[in-house]
Every structure is written in C-alpha cells, then in structure tokens.
Length: 114
Length: 112
View 1 (cartoon, rainbow over the protein chains, first blue to last red):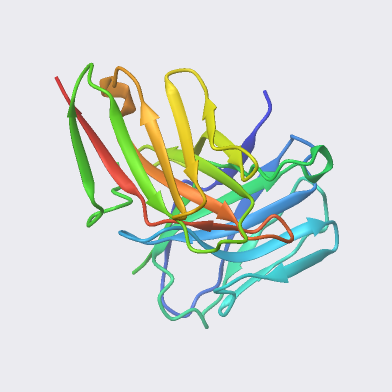
View 2 (cartoon, rainbow over the protein chains, first blue to last red; view 1 turned 30 degrees about the vertical axis):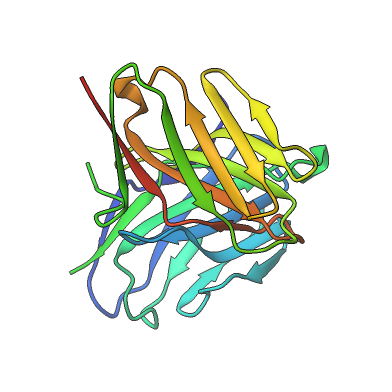
C-alpha cells in the first residue's frame, strides 16, 4: 500500500518544548516538502529536500529544522523558537525523475500549543 | 473535523449543476499549474494539472482552463455531487526545484 504517512495526526505541545513531526513515503520519490497551513491562507513552504542529506529553506523556515538521512523519511522539528506554531502541517513528495512537478500530500498533523 | 479555511470565499451550488472555480495566478513565467481538493482535516488531493503550452485539459468530470493573457486559471466540475464539497486550491510552479505557490483556496458547498 503505497503513499505518504504522517504521524501523529494530533500533537499537543507545551510552550518551550521542541516537537518532531514524522513524514514517511514509500513511493520512491526523490523530493519531499513540508508546508504549514493556517485558516484562510494557502500552504506556505517551510523546507524542502531534493536528495538525501540535502535540504533547502522555504519561505518560513525560521523556528523549524529538518533532516533527510533516508530517502523515505523527512522529519520536521518545531523548535521553541517558533513563536506561533499552532497550525496544520502537511508533508508532500514528488518524483522528479519523471519530469512532472506534481506533489502528493500526506494526511497532515495538527499541532496545538497549550 | 478541522476547518482549513474559516474565511475563504465560498461557492454554493445545487447538486447536479456545473461548478466553476476561479484562480488568478501571480507569475507570468509560471509554466505548470495544479488543482488540489482538500476535505476538512485531510491533506490536499491532486485533481488535475496543466502546462503553460496548453489552454485546456479534461479529466473525469473536471476541466481546467488556462488563460495566460490575463493569468487566470479555472476548474470546471460537471454534475457536481455532494462528495465534491471541499476547499479547492490552485498552485503554480514558478520555476526551479519544483516549488509550488498556492492560492488561498475556494470552498465549494454542494446543496441537495
């Protein structure tokens, strides 16, 4: 059963804590992405990675960190430096090898800061 | 479920009617466009895409129209069904590293 999985579905964090959101894909896609979604707004790019052990900042990278140690995994850490972390976080992947730009999304993780 | 668009523009249609959702994109150099459907509390789902060398593309019950002159994209859904109720996003690729820029979205509400 191929696809993109994110865990957990819901996550609660106390102020000052770091939390890590998981994203796994078994589609053999090269590229992976993290987006943040707030009500009434489109998706905003946090980080992206085109290849293992390499990643680039997106438009709103401050307060976040990522790693890409394996092709199938791209975890996102929301650090205490992120001032307003409550949001819906979406992970996506894309197969750069086939020449299309289509990104496929996981089911999302809703993070709430208490 | 969670609401992903509390203050989005809403298009209300009757079941069985055709729906047209519009999107104005920002970059005249964008060469690839995608429509996504997002149901409450879920991730966006790919619907249809179009490249800038085309002005129309059809899928199953959906058609995307691209007008590069006015930087406008539309999604037409034929015979709209209750299951089509969702938020619809357009996205454009402005070039390089498969980076997509997303619109804010339009909520489609289908009434029986």
